[in-house]
Length: 260
Image 1 (cartoon, one colour):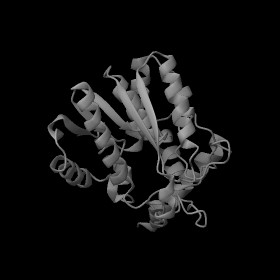
Image 2 (image 1 turned 90 degrees about the vertical axis):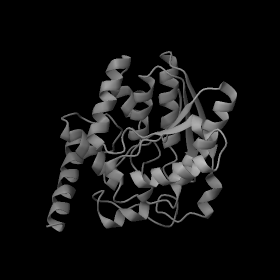
Image 3 (image 1 turned 135 degrees about the horizontal axis):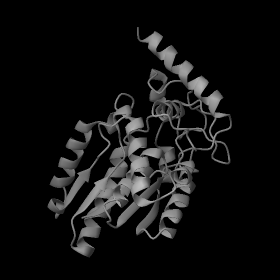
Image 4 (image 1 turned 60 degrees about the vertical axis):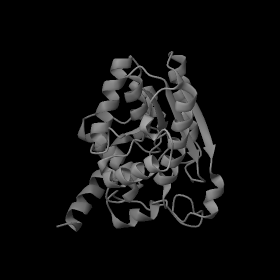
């Protein structure tokens, strides 16, 4: 079995990359430039791929240029005139970060790549995405029923689809469970967890160096998840961990009060 992974450079897909490397198989990683304002995530993905290759792992990494889509897609992640919202990940204003049909586009491309790899190698291939339960409320294209439906359509629309399946090990995981899986995989592979996760980008609003203020919804979710398992996040931030955690906990309390 071979694996084709949608690799954003974020925590979830990077954790999944390590998870797949534990299976000792060749990985075909695909990153997408879709005109996102946090495009520096692609550089973070490259850094980790380079590090893992230097450790002897077999990873084929391609970046697909879809940047012209920015003229078609309306989202605070792609629209230069719309600010990325701050606050708790589950707040309704976070829906502005939804990129229409993004995961369908990515899944379609990596499925096509998987079919082509099968034709070249004769091996079965799994397409892999790091979608997780924390995304289900805000992002409908991260829900299990979406993938059940879209993979059925892929099966119907391709020859040789019996050789392709979908692997979504985090689909019912929380963010903290994904981090724990990343730690476990790093230990098994004898890799430096802090080095790898320092080079993951979760924020939707990084500065020019890829540092986060810790205030976007994706940041808050990440900070709370690291705190939940008692681990300090090695990612790059513009503030101290104590201030980041104070803000994230305050957002969490405000969300709880709002939902009472």
